[in-house]
Image (cartoon, rainbow over all chains, first blue to last red; front, side, top):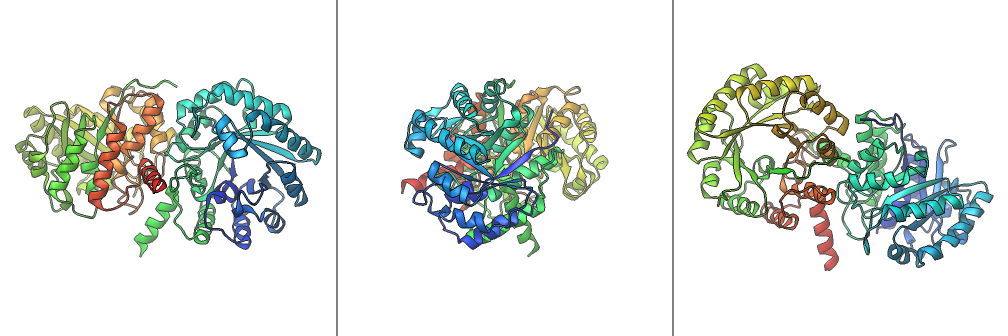
Length: 304
Length: 304
């Protein structure tokens, strides 16, 4: 099996994870958690979202979080930015990277952003232009790249078309999201086969949700195809907005276990990651669902 | 991705699943559950164990279960048999296939069977000879094929040596177990690369535990290498004897989802499998941990 020697894990727990958590946690707690994430060897943390607070009350304190976290110079602190208003807020607190987003599915995009895909492009184009003008890098997210909860299958050609538009507009990297966690490895392969002839593999990230337990299998297939950037969330935070209680983002610690055992370097410390997972578990006051956290709890009970 | 057109799922829930469940369930409940499994399209069910009842009280009713289940002619009903005494019991209730077992790890074998690996062979040889003499097929299990909880890594060469002995003694099929669920795809690949030059791929089954969430990834790699027989347990029953509370066998319904989405036939009905999972969930009175059961519960809550 041909595997990359080293991959980059992009921690999205503070944003993609917390935005789906009902219990509102305090700004101080978020900061404490993000500061702990800064100590585990990550090079990238998506810390919040500058979407209007009315849409995601959990992340209404984005400015304060960005201002108060202890930033390390070798970590990129990024946040989601939906439009120029959000960008203005993000630039004021000197975000390192601006993350824009849209969906590969027309109906999911309408449902999420309240615009058609065509209507979304000019908004993103403005944000990208302004962000680049301010000296920032820009990451694009395309969600529902395998399937949409309303439309079903999304074609790799559709994803390619969108990727093309976004790279042409100037994004530096594109994260491809299986937002509802339905994908399986041969679908991931077909998607990457469509994209890799056109886009450099080191500009593509894979973003899997583990709702059906297929995330690690999809990551292995992506690794075999040369992908070296993966999004994940400590504790598998995030849930699934379409099946409350089901699993969310692939858990950083489960991904770390897989990569470590396969001999792929990440720079992230597995045990420190577990400690950070325990911190946010305590803050949220609920058991996190990653397999590694299950094992940790099981071992803990065994000791009692 | 090259995938087999069709695979066989061997349901081990009533044996490998229940043997790790603390709550003793009644014989009538077991029979009801196994009868439900006979209706979902499976061709193979491991229904119990003829290990001495003192070791596995949960399965002490093996004879009665075998006698009273409604057998279908196109399903193989198998059970674990440790020695000639167990075989005698199994033959009396006309078991279809005799499943013998040992470990690839010296210390795990000692711990489980109370014999060295060399001391185990003659016992198994007797059982195989008698079982074949009685017209039965014999399935071998080798556990800890990737790693052992006491010794760590197990070499593919060690597994090959054992496979060689067992096939020479006359077993019809060998199931390779990652008993503690630590394996990752490149380890599975190395193991199969060692075995496939010597043994026909249709005589090898893979038996993964999903303790660390890697089972489906390991199954995908096995499929790519031509393996067409997989063990699984409804509801992911089984737990991990070395980390109580952690996940057990890969869940039949999670495996079914993966295979169905990848276009691999199994003959098993996904929705019927979920109904059978709900039945044993009710009997056990605890939430089963498979991703598909989580989704089912989540959707149920969504409806309320």
